[in-house]
Amino acid sequence: MEDRFGISEKVFDNYLLLKRKGSWQLISNGVLHAMSASQLKVSKVGLRAFQKIGKFVKPTTRLIQVFGTAATKARIEIDDEQLARLVAGEELSMDLGLDTGYVILVQRNGRVLGLGFFINGKVRSQIPKKELRQAMLEYKNG
Image (cartoon, rainbow, N blue to C red; front, side):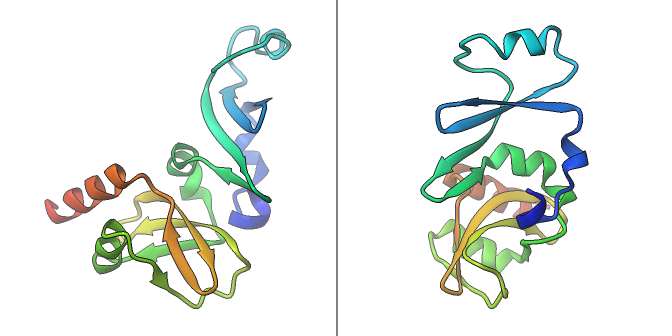
């Protein structure tokens, strides 16, 4: 997170990451008996934080919505026209000077929408379509 997005590790000091198969769950350090529970076979706990996709570890939409405001890198502010294009399933052509990988998509009002994937000079939305449409409606309604 720090290398790609500039989100300091310190932001996560009060949390534990539990790994299960190809994903990681984030839970508060304050959870009673968290260390004991980490030894158990748990199906779901906390906030799903990351999942392994190919050679990338992808942060989840929720994780980025919660912690993305702390990002200092790979963060792209998009306007209402670009948001509409993403809602329509289009890619955004951008010269970002970044390696292939995930980027954080932020509305001009500072609201963190979620992730896009940057490859070959284009950003593709990784945000669930329902959430993109909701963001567009909220933007239009003020």
